[in-house]
Length: 467
Image (cartoon, rainbow, N blue to C red; front, side, top):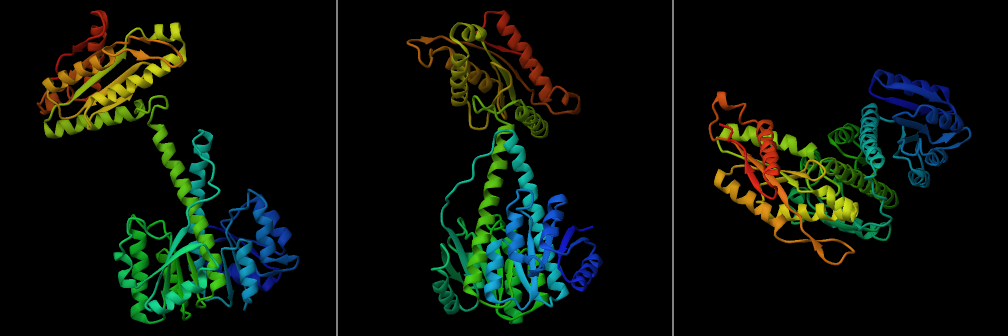
């Protein structure tokens, strides 16, 4: 089944006729005869979409939207309201209450199914992002929603710039958006491509050649990394159900089939901007969570989860190119004494400063990760033994030469580090593949670190080359 749809209508024949159409398109259909029954059903088993009559025995579609919005479980459910020749007042009231769309019956089957696919697709995408956001919240990574954000922007695109400018003048008092205009052939060549509009309104004039160009523009906007998350509303000046359905399937988010209606358009643009802002926040939260998953929260360095796959990639690249790479394991000397004598806050401060010094002494291509309490791993791709040795000594000196100041204390303490290092050989024949592996070099570096500890600490010890 493509999805579950709840039909809400007090007239039995209407429900049956719509159910037959949806069942033929492989949707699972449940029915409700009233507003109260619909709310109960939606809370018990939330559908992917609710299609409701504009008028119900115990209320209206707008009333249903408000009841659904009052519950966290049903607030995000998309609602499509349908009815014969709804007045402008009814359309606006229903959209303002939270309906995704209002369509007048009879509805062309192609257009109806296209709109249903579009709404369910958007709902499922939002659900996926919300589930990821829930995971981030559980990990303590979510940020509160911003109360206020920058003003949005909208570009009106169509073949008649004069008409678009007149529309913009009418819209400005109704919505806080920066409105611009462009011809379809110039829409992809705008100078502000690095900061594209939040929303595109594509005007379809009902002329085959120009209509085809508009449909191609939808595909282009969805394909571009700069505009793929922008809202797209298609505004038809002449009714064409097949073209409207095609536009929705190509990626349009919203549709107006009856020409320019400023109050309705303003409502739709506000809703689209709100959804876009929510999507941006959810994506940002997920990105933050992904970064946190591979980062050490104390030092900001990479953690073992990132370091080991990175080491494997460097090893694979070395086997392909024949260029050697180095692996170091650095461990702070007598770090437990710092925690015991000065407290864990002092120990944390030392670790943070050590991380900063290690980063500052390495090349941009090198990686440093905290892989244990006071243990760090450094991976240096494409390096010679001489260069690796020079940098290892530099790392050791960067820690041991300058004392560490502790927060809230007068004076400073001396900290030293021991480093074990191993470097791969340049040979890449099959019989050396095992020796070139990252795990092998890490083990050699660990042995070298042990030797550095045994022989006095505060030094660099080199493991045998993997050759």
